[in-house]
Length: 202
Ligand code: A8S
Image 1: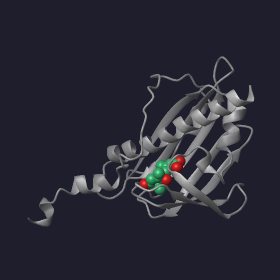
Image 2 (image 1 turned 135 degrees about the horizontal axis):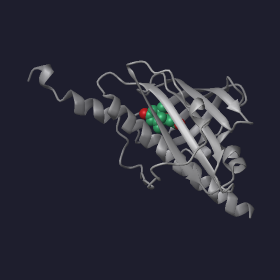
Image 3 (image 1 turned 90 degrees about the vertical axis):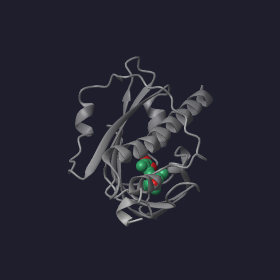
């Protein structure tokens, strides 16, 4: 069989697939989450033609202060990110410019990721990090996460956006499906952990 006839797409797609060993629970999201107009400006990314970008939202039944207390700790992403096994700070102490080396659980198409804290804004409840290394296929990944009080004042709306290069051999759609799945899982565990903390504190 000539190499051009090889099923390249499925091969490359497989490289971007999360193992079925990781349970992925999709909680239905409301089609439009009410967030203030000012939110959009935090989530504007410069995107080149070879990149893809997406925005995800998550409603959490916990105060902004509780969700922020978990999210802002750059040195311990394993507190809520289920794909993270261990994390070592290799530069800084969780302040802007800190570098963390994340080691992932087995069954994923990657084992490590080196990440840099770009923005930590305690007033705006905004955190941004970029991925600068690792054995994975997500080059030039950058995300922004912001927290907003829900209209009744007791809950939190999380908005997370990202931009990343589309890996050679994959489409924008495949890349977004892959990254959206990871981000969605992270947001759902952030909701779970924040809600548990809120119940404990009552
Ligand atoms: C985050 C977001 C992402 C993390 C991805 C997208 C990653 O940690 C995983 C699998 C990969 O193939 C890429 O907020 C990488 O953590 C779970 C190792 C970077």
